[in-house]
Amino acid sequence: MAIKIYKPTSAGRRIHSVTDYSILTKNPTRVKSLIRSKRRNAGRNNQGKITIRHQGGGHKHSIRLIDFKREKMDIPAKVQTLEYDPGRSAFISLLAYKDGERRYILAPQGVVAGEILITSERAEIKPGNRMMLKHIPIGTFVHNIEMLGTTGGQLARSAGAYAIVAAQEPDYTTLKLPSGELRKFQVKAFATVGQVSNSDWKYVRIGKAGRMRHMGWRPSVRGKAMNPVDHPHGGGEGHNPIGLKYPKTPWGKHALGVKTRNKKKNSKFIVKRRR
Image 1 (cartoon, rainbow, N blue to C red):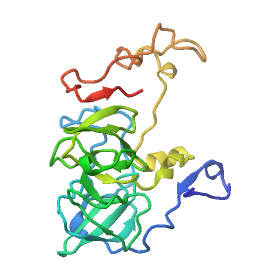
Image 2: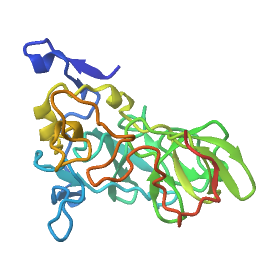
Image 3: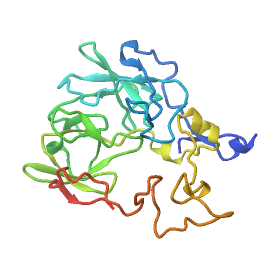
Image 4: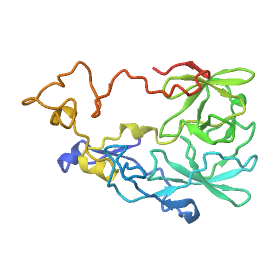
């Protein structure tokens, strides 16, 4: 398991673990044209109002421009590095194409520096190669999946994520997504073979509140710990239950069992809902 645990020299260290970065390329050359500074908005919209709670602060970091489309067809690319990306849970790789261009991609599990990858309508079934869904055998792990042609990968992009090719039809390929949903995709949509790297990321224990603040997460306070004026769950003496028939949001709306999917979204491609 690629998780590193330190000696318990403090209370925070005792329950804290980090990802083991020893497999990454040592001192990689930064491609400045593919790096941008990240602008923070602390969960606020264009009017300055907080629309997403518990965001703010955090360590300053830069964004790597990831190529989710990989539309350079039939041009071999050599994996130059395996790198850490502060903007995502997965590792990234720098591809050097035969025509001289360089691009960052999501690093697939098991891919190492020096390998040759390719994007083609039909290619070898090996981690990192990108091709049309109709040419990928049933049971294969895929990630960075297009929902519509030419949009680039939109699904299964976080650390350790993958979808499984469940069925092949003349016009559609059925995938089992990480959520458990079975969904049909057009056979001409592209996907990358393999699982996203850093699959042990989910086992990392944060260990202390300060580490969450460095990540840009502000504290989340229980509604039942507030006053009645601040939250529907608030009030009462001492440690009380919420005192209502069902949990509510800070604005009084139902918080459990409410369907949140947009009714306007097209559901005809969903074979089986997620659990």
